[in-house]
Image (cartoon, rainbow, N blue to C red):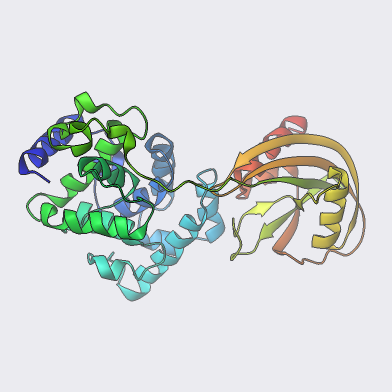
Amino acid sequence: MRQEDVRELLDWFLHHQREMPWRSNPIPYWVWISEAMLQQTQVATVIPYFHRFIQRFPTVDSLAGADLQDILKMWEGLGYYSRARNLHRAAISIMTQFNGQIPDDYVTLQTLPGFGPYIAAAVVSIAFEKAVPVVDGNVLRVFSRYWAIADDISAGRTRSAIFSRLVPVIQHVRPSQFNQAIMELGALYCTPKSPACPKCPVRSGCEANATQQVDRFPVKAKKAAVPHFTIGVGVIWHGGRLLVTRRKEDQMLGGLWEFPGGKQLPGEGIVDTIRREITEELDISVTVGDPIQVVKHAYSHFKITMIAHHCTFDHGDIKLKSASAMKWVWPHELQELPFPKANTKIIDTLLKECP
């Protein structure tokens, strides 16, 4: 990268960077929590979550000593819940292996749960000023255009090549400022669609801009079609309370509570799906009643349409076959437990029906 472009980039960042709480106080713990939250999530969404999380768990020690259910509840709605479970596991490791101090070494950090190359680089560069390039989606996009890289940016070799080309660049600047400047540039100007090239501080050295091929980059392999599943769930009532189950820790959305149910089979009516899934999961019999709500939700690799019905418990001794725990709760107690986002929409409707 040309030295004059580096200077222009850093000057631009100095005057145009957005205010973020972890930027004003870039201590290792704050940087770590913010970067974990920012994976797959927009800054505007993260900021209120960050404030609540830090208020509830202000130190590594407090996070390590917290109940995972409390952590998941604070994370509720952010998605990608493995991030929250890894935060807890890593905090425990930091307390037991590193005397409560977050390591300042790029390689050592990657031995901790949830610390891949990206978060490790972000923490050591932003919090400790170590000269390690951060390579996230924004950085890949910026430099695939700046250097007109025609390789697939989703390939590991492309990420490694950009990392290697940035190593000598970052040696001569403040790593925290350089890494954040590139990420900010990708977020604000060098966007996936309709990039603001005339405003870009590094446009004079950008090969894609010089050859008027900005729209050609970055190169990405075509994604496979996203599968869709219809899910039937039952809100099972008995004596004024309703039944919820907790997913196993090693499952997707592990540790979160949910209403029992599962995927609709081909040719199966949704009422039959709910009745069958409840019998398979819990070994009980229910009467499926009125519908409550239809919820559409997208995960990273698939989409669902969740259809919820009221159910009445008939008979049977509950035997958990695919869950780690169950409980009967009063409607208002639902708000005390961590649920996936699709379930929280159903809960909102239930609480309106029975405040």
